Image 1 (cartoon, rainbow, N blue to C red):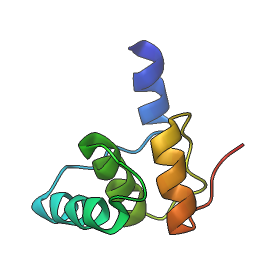
Image 2: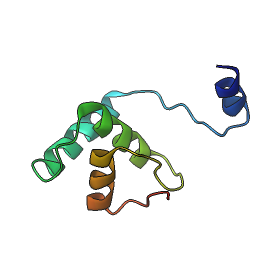
Image 3: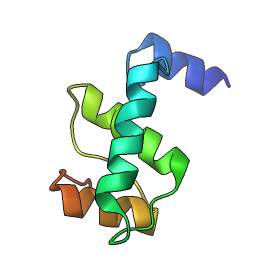
Length: 78
């Protein structure tokens, strides 16, 4: 927890509040990707959040999230 708090203070991690708009955008992603990528709800929320901010490549080891990111043309780390 201390390391997490240090990363927050150092702005290595940015917290984004869940909003109605993010939920709607996640729903749109689920609809867009189904049935090509069987994305889970929390993965869709993660992607919607990622898309809502300016950031670098997406970090994930999750196969479905990776497939969704590739389908959407998002930059992936590693």
